[in-house]
Picture: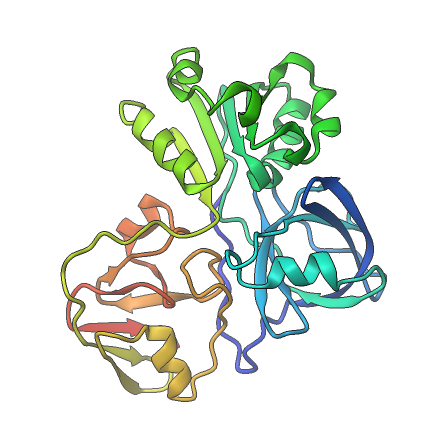
Length: 329
């Protein structure tokens, strides 16, 4: 499976965005609320795959991304879960959802996008940290249904902060809960020592967990580790960005991208309507097709193979390795 490709729309909205109503809001852990969403029209919701997320357009104009964590076989309802960020840490979306959003409210959402695709494997190891359990839940349901060999190690600050414990307990000893206040940090070295080399490893959680896991998996086969981040990696580049040209092939226009501005920013400033959401290279909504030139990929969405092909670019963060990019716009 590969990430879904969304083309630009003249309205600035994707043709497959849709209106849903918040049917219910439930506390599923300390500081975590689960929202059940149903379509306003009564039509069936689009199908989705384990690892998919949706954009949620809040009344404030903010757009946030949340993983689908319900039953993907239910076409009548979606479920997402939202962690309330501490004051000053988040961007206001979780605060609104926790304090102001009410059941019965209509909101607009984007179609599911799968940037964290589940691959076929002989066995699986899932490692979740905190709210990172959300994309993992449907993955576990799928591989369990398929009869695959799997294990989940689920860490959190406290047992009370770990969402969906009751749903996971039904899997018995395949699930290991690791509350930090009782057991400390997850013993990644010990967990991996018990994990065969042909295991597909999936992890979502805080940056510190994923960075430690990447280090521990350095000698694993290429492609064994799959991660999804809450925030982009810290950019450790020391080179100074330079200006380059972006040619819009369908419009026969050339736009100069200065060193301190993104492609997305300059296209919007020039009146070009393109889809965007997170503006951090995390969601994939601003992805565009490259016709010529070499992108300087800085996103968290494209796979190594997609980066190598240079067929797509996330225009909110990525730049050009050269002087000119031609986009199918």
